[in-house]
Picture 1 (cartoon, rainbow, N blue to C red):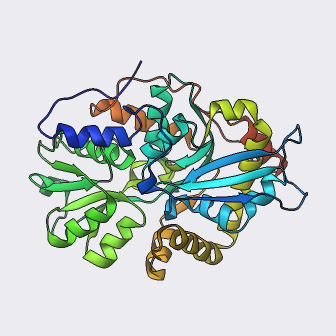
Picture 2 (picture 1 turned 90 degrees about the vertical axis):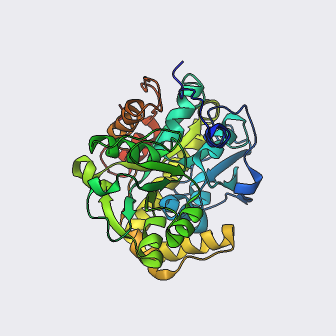
Length: 371
């Protein structure tokens, strides 16, 4: 089975914790109470377009997502009632928020949630860990919104030698992107924090503080943290990740469903996908209202509200799409392998886009492709 490669090093305990949070070394668990909150809603919208269970029996759908602008489709879907409307009166929607993709995938493994919005690398690792049995990617959600931001005096890649850069988590999507890009620039890294450039995985909030105090020289982070580093700490953009991808398109967030739930309740999953498609349309048609709903939901989940200037600026760097951009997932896996974080993997079967394409066809939209 392909897996993250085991490495011993002086900071072993730190990285084992990071890997545990990544859902690769942990056994089944019910999510991290310190990083999540839960709520429940009984779906019961209008009958038009709403999916329900084919048996008519009540079903509970437990959905995970992050209190983050990159998860706006989930936040808008919940906050506007779009998800409840599309799921129908026989589905009780329960939600749980997470701060890391590994914790969300752990919860999916442990049967604590049935579906979650998550980034590409946690989905890859969950699929590999379970030998393809645990999950399926059923829809896209968000593209873009990741940047390498640095101190203003750093103007080019060569000037990063000897510097310290942060990422959100060892082996996460931005961590892999940074290591891969540095390798292309001829700069070596390792998981112990050594090499030409020292990479320090840590929580994004710590990264903001560390940059302000000068402990780090930059970070490869997703929105809204890139914008916050620019607005609040005077960072500048060295790399906009969109420039590294064909047409600037790569997956940031997609919708993943536990395969046992998908097999048992395809009608409920279809209703959730209908909600995703409707929420994405609402976001693109009503950006100002969607920013407010997103910020309201973030405040409700974290008790902290983003500054309006931050969410407006971060929003411009994101594309909300139902296309999971499968080719970018394959490239992310290849990059993780090339930088020594993942063995060679076969991702054939990780996608099940059949229900999404049914929903898109009914809406008169073109189908999307898997690998």
